[in-house]
Length: 155
Image (cartoon, rainbow, N blue to C red; front, side, top):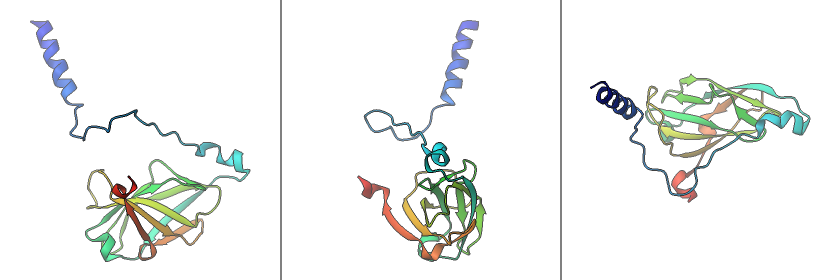
């Protein structure tokens, strides 16, 4: 009887790990490994922390709110706990944008999607590219960002 109980508990425990995510595409699974950890050594430039603030409004982009996920690109990479921000329709930013760079970024790219502030992480819509004011504590005016292609257009 204990054996059957143990099997039953194991099956219940395993079901907790199941998800409703779509099946992965056929082919090998890809693992991404950041090459950014040696940028200071490769470039000879010191790494510095930069903080970003998003201001302004863009009613056609933001609608009921927009979640932005920072996309790493030279000369910067995002700090793990500070790459997701939410912007409200009235321009209120929630979250932190902190990145580490060898030079101040001129532009920053985000994966974006419309969502409420407390929404769970889900598939984003596409890419958003924004100019910065190139300062240590930089500002991004959301009205000057360019909406790039949706992810489905990359196929």
